[in-house]
Length: 126
Image (spheres, rainbow, N blue to C red):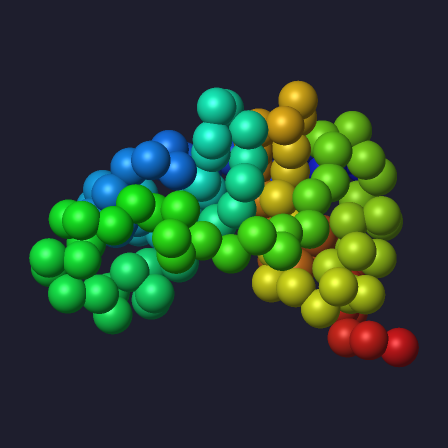
């Protein structure tokens, strides 16, 4: 099975030049605790609502989201095998993998994505 077949494509993106307030507004709208940050339509990182919520209203309106992004994402292509995604999640000890096509995020894979009916998937380090 391919990553594309099981990924969650409900993602939100924001430009790196957008204000932190816009990123937080979109995360609230999409009911996501994170948002992908793009620069010239290329993925450069992710911003988390918990980090934005700590900012004062004036900083939310003054600072670009790029000042608050995390850049250490693990990415996988949509045509990769789900076993590779499972291996990457386990070894990288991450909550999710970013599914990227042509430099743009198109979805995410979580441990729950990998759980198939009748088959439990363990992502604990061996």
